[in-house]
Amino acid sequence: MLTGTELSASIDKLLVLRKEIVSAFIDTFVMLGISTTVAIVIGGLFGVFLFLSSDRQFLQNKTLYGLLGGITNFMRAFPFVILMIAMSPFTKAIVGTGIGPIAASLVLAIAGSFYFARLVEQNLREVPRGIIEATESMGARPFTIIKVLLNEARSGLVLSVTILCISLLSYSAAAGMIGGGGLGDLAIRYGYYRYQTEVMIFIVIVLSIMVVSIQASGNWLANRLDKR
Amino acid sequence: MNDMIVLNDVTKSFLSDRSIKDKDGKPHWFTAVEPTSLTIKQGEIFGLMGYSGAGKSTLLRLINMLERPDSGQVVIDGTDLTTLSASELRIARHNIGMIFQQFNLMSNQTVFDNVAFNLKISGYPSRDIHKRVMDCLAIVDLTDRAGHYPAQLSGGQKQRVGIARAIAPSPKVLLADEPTSALDPATTRSLLTCLRDINEQLGVTIVIVTHEMSVIRRLCDRAALLHQGQLLEVADVRDGLIQATTPIGKGLVVED
Image 1 (tube, rainbow over the protein chains, first blue to last red):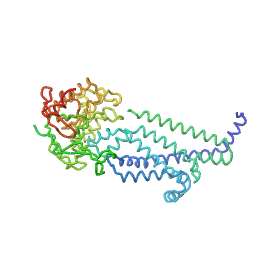
Image 2 (image 1 turned 180 degrees about the vertical axis):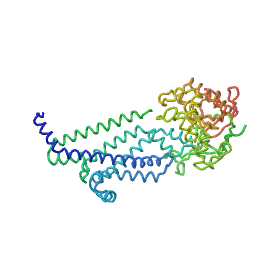
Image 3 (image 1 turned 60 degrees about the vertical axis):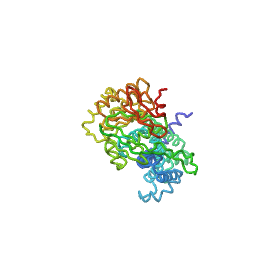
Image 4 (image 1 turned 30 degrees about the vertical axis):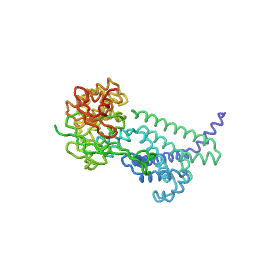
């Protein structure tokens, strides 16, 4: 058990680091915000086309499905740390630098996109085939059918965004390797390399709280949206 | 009366499961509809009847081209659907409503929105949609359920929403794919009355697929008897009896 003096000493050590902690918070939120948003857009589009090009759907096309699926599998095969290094020329070309939170966000976004694409595909598969058929029989345009699909799958999609967001939060800990900063990076640098266990414990608690709140809000929203 | 639906030598086959091969080793094609010609008149209630695998659902789905025929013509109200482009076909489909055994309502939309959806995509003037939806819900006696979600309704109510949705854009044809097969006998009876009323009041031509003899006897003017993809005969229904003449047809209409 911690004594009162030990506890206050630990808090003092954390207070000394308050600037680093605040900036780590900001970096984490930047990385998470950018990468989740981009992954939802790109991964969402990719997932929709994966689904539509699959067997018995209206864009059914073995070559297209094979191509999209192949790209997805290939990108998902990269361990995140390797992907960060492999993508550095690309991030340099796009954001002008291969390091820092923005560069890290880009790598996170790419990794997240292909992860999310599979989740979207899976969710759309859950929509009963008959609903698509009914929509087709009414003479709906393909774009309208896609909207119906997404709306019918919406609670599953919200849960998938929740999973995506939590995965990206955990990936972002590795972003320190390319100077991405963030909470995970702070935990490694101070908590592990400098043996400041209180920093490690503090950050693990903060990350746990974040994961729990993301999951809880996701569950709440998914339940609200589910009318099935 | 005018001819509303004319099928001219339509055929349809499907590629079987990969494990089934023909003698020459090629994948087996399963013929769901042998060359079939059929004429359905405006305002008729026409039944498609047969055991499972008879091709009756496929034949129905050829009428709105949910399945494209391998050959032959599908002429609806004078237009050959097989010659239309994708966008022309979409417009033609606004004229052909459809209801399903599993209802196929959008579960995340209210009853009102399910009906309004079909009006929106068929280009109904948006300021008139509210009134039209409520009118259609009144026809199927569900105005008090407008704000409910499908999951809150019974099977019979869901099917009536399906009917309201299908007839909302005032189609000339209503296709019904086993609409009562998921319903109990009492609900089936009230649904058939509902379809009958719609036919009489709106003059919509109804084509109904069923394996239930009683549905044909209660509802239809004529019925096509199908067996293994072939049209055996088109029988009149008089005084609640199906006037089959062919041997297999007679066997088919014997109530078990």
